[in-house]
Each structure stands twice: as structure tokens, then as C-alpha cells.
Length: 414
Ligand code: PLP
Image (tube, rainbow, N blue to C red; front, top):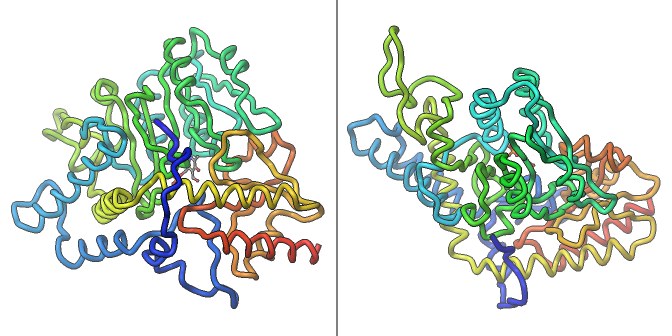
């Protein structure tokens, strides 16, 4: 795993990239849209939109069970996209890739399948204070069912994990460590390789939530050593409603299915049903075929980019944004860890984050305001929420400057 950036400063033609995103070219509230809500969901290039439309216009049929040309085409596209994800994650086996609705469903699958089969009263699940609710609530639910306990790694004032506390929390009762690779609320990049190593040394498994990381890092989950790795398509230029669970083959083979129905069986009889093999054992029912096709198109499209150059451009925009916020009186940045992706969380003195968000929207600027589905983190930091501006490589320096000017104007209303 490596962050896509460093000294590489190849020319990046942002206008050429932007021109592939139809949604970016519109006015909102009388101003050209400035979309800085990329940590919530990134916009889709025409290649993805067109691939989905093409699929429905020409190739749609149900997968795996048809004996006709369209079913074959749909199945080839569906399984081909699985192979693309396997390659994207560093060359894992395609059987280790399970399609889900998103990060949330991937974690629920692990909690309900692996968790219910393996957790016992007194076992411990280690989470952190900066987890998204998607990596908290499923564990609380499975803990309530099994009697397992949740232990929580604290976060420092700067928004980093307290790694000494993490080491101290690990013990012989630890069964699973589930940690986000990048904080969606603060942008902090966590030392996940070290976290996985420490979890394994304690005899536990490690689940890494890659929802905020996949668009910034070249992933190699084998080198990372994660037992489970999860992400959502919509944060990686793909459609909503599609996501991925990667898990090591031995784990998947041993895990019971979570949902039952068509596609996941070998033989069904009232006397007893047997299940098919991975990955289909975990994919009951008609899947989101169009979503999978869109995900495959997104990965193909990403492959046409110089991702180093794109990341360098994004890093430069973020540096410009962060410096402007740091210099702005009455603005308090939340999350100042040295290792961060392009997420700027902040508060404006005397204003509720939601009001700041609305005032920015009136100037055509889309940001997120609120707790970012990280209520425990907000409670730890003693704040109700933040305003979050998050940058993608299709943003421009002029947009960052527009955001900064708009925020200056917001301050005059407060
Ligand atoms: N984990 C993190 C770190 C996230 O940022 C998000 C979404 O913002 C999720 C999990 C949940 O993703 P989804 O809603 O796509 O399932």
C-alpha cells in the first residue's frame, strides 16, 4: 500500500478530467457549482454513466442462470468486474471478492457471519473513537447477541489514534480489530499496516475500513495483511448501491452464509440445504448487476488516469485550502494530524456548522456539515459537528479560492 503522491509532479490536465464529469457543469443558486463534498460521495465520469446505460440498453439479463446470449453477456460483465476489483486490490483471488451494497453492508456481513459464528461471551472487539457508525453499530449488535465486549482506542486532540493505548488494549481476549484506514471526519491516515501487525501478534483478525482510502491509495491488501477489507463503489467514482468485501479465502470458506435465497445454494430440499462455494455463497438473490457493471467501468476509467499526477494535483489543492483555513481568523481547524488526506474539517466561531453549510450552499458551494456519522468522535472532541470540505482531483485551484472567498463572506453574516 502506498499513498499516490510524493514528488511526482507530472502535468495534470484538470480541465480534461473535469470535462468527463457532466454534473460538475451546472449552476447552483445562481453560481457555478463548487463540489467539495467528495468524502461523502464522488461524482461519476461519463464513462461510468454510459456503461450503466449501455448495459441496460444492450446486455441486461439475470446473471449465472440463463442459457441465452444476454445472460452470458451480463454474467461475463459481472464476473469480469469482480476480477477487476481483485486486481485493483493488489492481485487477490477473485473468489475473495464479495459484492455487497457498500461498506456498511460489507461490515454487517462480517459481523453477522464471522462474528456470530466466532464470538463468545467475554471476547473483545477493538474499535477506535474515530470509526464511522458503519464500523460501530454492527459490532454493538453482534456484541449484544454474543456477549462479546467492545474496547475503544482513544483519539488524541490532533485527531490521531493513541497507539500506546491501542497496544495496551490488545490481549488474549481480542478476537478482532476493526479500524478505518482514513478518518472520514478528520482525514487522518491511520497506520493500518502497524495496526494489522499488532492485531495478528495478539492472535486477532483485522478488518480495515477502506471507504475513505481507496480513492487515495494504491491498495495491496495482501501486503497490508488485512483479513477483511471493505469499501463502497460510490466513493471510487462508481455507482451507489455497490460495495466490496475482500476476505481471505480460508476465512470465507469457514464462514456461514449470512443471507439465504437463490444463487447461494448448491441443493435445496426440505430435508436440508447445501450451499454453493465462495464468493456466491455470500451473494443471495439477484445482485446489483448494473452497479457491478458501473464499478467495473469506474476501475477501468481510473486505470486511464495518471493517478500519481491526479493525487499530486489534489494534494496541492488541499495544501492551498488548509493554509487558507489556518490563516483565517475565527476558523478552527478540527483534525491536524500530520498524515491526512484532502479532508478539511473546521468550525467557524459563533456559528453552527449546519448554518455555515447552508450559507455556503447559497453561494453554490457544496460541503458537508454535521457529525459525519461519527458521533463518538464528535463527543470526544467536545463539538456538535464540523463543516467538512473535501477535495477530489477534479477540483481546481479557482474553486478552492471561491470556497475561501465564500467562507469569508459567510463570516460577515455571523
Ligand atoms: N466508513 C467510512 C470511513 C465512511 O466514510 C463511510 C461513508 O461515509 C462508511 C464507512 C459507510 O459507507 P456507505 O454508506 O457507502 O456504506
